[in-house]
Every structure is written in C-alpha cells, then in structure tokens.
Length: 361
Ligand code: ADP
Ligand code: GN1
Ligand code: MG
Image (cartoon, rainbow, N blue to C red; front, side, top):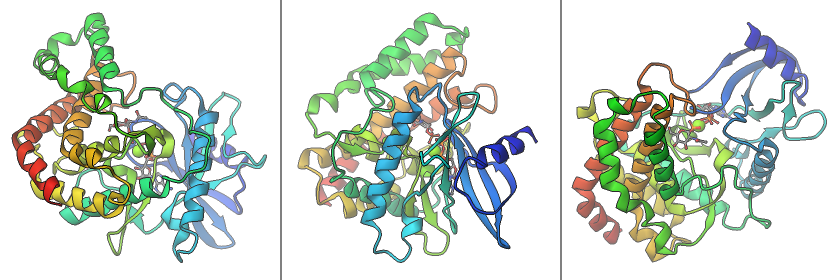
C-alpha cells in the first residue's frame, strides 16, 4: 500500500493524463525499483513504467538521465519513419517541470517510460530464433548509435567492464571477507585465481571505443508477442562508451544456456552451440557494417570473458554480504556465480568450434 501511495504521489509530478488506478512492482531486474502503473485515460486503460533509480549504484542520476534523454531522442529520430516507432525505442515521459526525471523529497530520482505493449522479456532463452532476434536488436541498437552527436556520453559507472579492476575488487572482497563467507566459496575463489590471465585480453587488444549498451542480458530486450521480433532494447542506465564486444559477450552469457541465471542444478547449465550460432548471425546481421575484423575475431572470447566477469561480481557481492545485486534468498549470489563459472567451462570446451564458426560467417 505504501508503495502504491508513493507511486501515486510521484505520478502527479509527471505529464500523464487521466486518473491513477494502481501500481505494482514489475519485472526481475537486479538494480532499480520498477513499477507498472495503470491510468484511466477517458475510459482507456494505459500502462506506464515507473522506476526509482538506485542511487547507491548510480552516483549521478542527473547525468544518467541526460544520457538516457539523448539516447532515446536520437533513436526516436532514427525510427521515426516506422509505423510502430513508439514501440521501437523507449520514450521518456517528462516531468511537469520539463525535466526527464523527478527528484522526490527523500532524494530519490524517478523516471517514467511509456509501457511497451504486446511484447515481453525472458529470463531464460527458449529458442534459437529468440537468440537471433535479441542479438539483432542489440546489434541494431549499437548501429543506430554510431552517429550519436557529440559530446561523449557520461560514464554512469566508471570502469564498468574493466575486468582487471573487477578482479582487483574481488581480491579485496576475499581479503576482507566481511560476511565470513569465503569458507563457503573456496572452489569458486580457486576458479577465479586460475582464470586471472584472461582478464586483460580485450583491453590489450586496442579495440575501438563505441557507444554501447553494456548490460545486454536477455531480459533487457523486449520481443514482440506476435512476431517474436526483437522490438525494443530497454534498461539504458549503462549506455555509455565501451567495447562492442561487452555487449556481445553478455548476450552469450545470458542467451546460450537454457537456464536462469541462478539455476542451482548445474548439470543443466551449458553453452548450447545452436544458440551461439543464432547470436552471431543475429548480431552480425546488424553489426557487420561497422565491426572491425579484430572485433569479429574476439566474439567467442568476449562471451567467455563477460561471463567470467559477471561471475566475479556475483562472487564479490556474495563475499561482501549481498550489498549490490538484489537477492531473494540466501546464497543466491553464490548460485549465480556458480552458473557463470559452469558456463565459462562449457565455453572453454567448445571455444575452438565457436572460433571456427565465426570465421565462416
Ligand atoms: P533493472 O535495471 O532493475 O534491470 P529494467 O529497466 O531492466 O530494470 O526493468 C525491469 C523490467 O521491467 C524489464 O526486464 C522489463 O520486463 C520491464 N520493463 C522495463 N521497461 C519497460 C517498458 N518501457 N515497457 C514494458 N516493460 C518494461
Ligand atoms: C544487473 O539491471 P540488470 O538487472 O539488468 C547489472 C549488470 C549485471 C546483471 C546480472 C547496473 O543488470 O551489470 O550483468 O545485473 N547492472 C548493473 O544479471 O550493475
Ligand atoms: Mg534490466
């Protein structure tokens, strides 16, 4: 009830017509507080997405919203000729003062997006066609942003995909062992130490900086209910300068194993080759025009690296006592870490074939 009242009170600050009906928590993101709010607009029920930005994680929500406004405006121009334009990119609803957000008395920053109807996100991949569609949408997203006008976007989280720094943070978390949990994660810590040498490979490869999404997990793209098409890329908080490979890598992490991220039965976790192939084909169908040969060559490696990197982050958060990612049960971050490392192993076993495939496409 408190939450309903909160969202209702927040809603008054946005340029939304009609009568507030209800609001409820929505989605399975790990970071922000997301609500679906229903309004009655002259007899028609219209939904909106309300989000309270997690300012423990995003230290500068105003800069973040400046990025989001620039990116959504640019994308809107690009898709404007499409009859379905309003579902092909997120659309921010302005606050009554004209800003793209509202700051409440407690210092929380809220934003509102039009609800993308007749489409949904998936927490686990169900088919190769879905993998193709998701990858094509993220590739298209990068492509449409290749000519985003200057200035450079803000780094909403500095060094977000700097894997060696993520590794150093893990080492500090092991050392501090703040929640006395290192004893529960000996095998995982050992796994990390063994894999340390891969952390700097992409940074050493001298790849071009681009505008990238940086959080391309499967449930950050909406697939159309009827056609299955990857219709809209969402969750724009980490859109900033990065490597194209960070985005492809996170697709491999979240769309090649049939399991959810926190699957406890590790025997079910595996890199499925047909899903990888669909990702490569879908991504290249949009990104081929701008990708360099070096970027293309590293596609399989990026899958391994980003899976490892997010595994490190889950492990570090488990050791720190679950202060970053939302958890809904004890040990969830360790379970998430384990699925990542199992997937890294599965990729390693198939890496030669993955490299071969990429060469032929
Ligand atoms: P988080 O940063 O916490 O992951 P997201 O922006 O990804 O938050 O939103 C969480 C979930 O809410 C998404 O996975 C998606 O299912 C849903 N969602 C977000 N934005 C929209 C939108 N504009 N229309 C419909 N659903 C949305
Ligand atoms: C978070 O916001 P969400 O749930 O889409 C995280 C990503 C991780 C992901 C792991 C800002 O993504 O970096 O890869 O969880 N986002 C942030 O599921 O840290
Ligand atoms: Mg999300």
